[in-house]
Amino acid sequence: MSFSAPPKENIGIFTPLPEMSRTDADVAVIVVFFEGARYDMPVDDPMFAAHKPLRNKGHPNWGGMKQSVSNFTTYGPDHPAGLLGCAVQVRFNVSLMAWRLSCFN
Image (cartoon, rainbow, N blue to C red; front, side, top):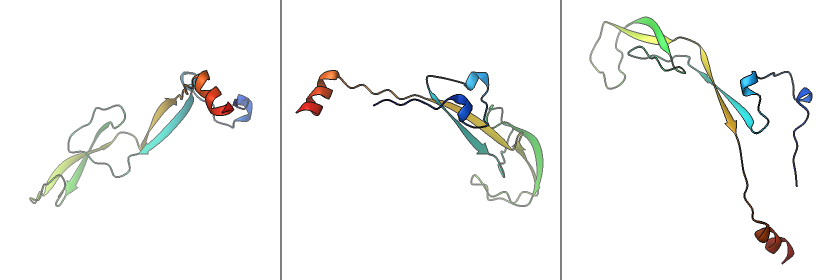
């Protein structure tokens, strides 16, 4: 049994970046939304970057902090969402001898 993908012009309106256009793998794009994310210090990670200082009032009560803090600074995400792209490849190794034994016995 074989499978072939439909011609690229029939797939839809999505046009991948040249770096994402592959003929040897399926490309999966995962969207991560950062709504409500807050960090207690700036984050330099490319995916989860957060450098926007936010003033908070009241009791933070996260990470085991139970004391009353009247003013403290947290950092919000630089972007509302991030994208993660993955190339997915699958390889099946089936020996010809095993195939013959299972199909003809």
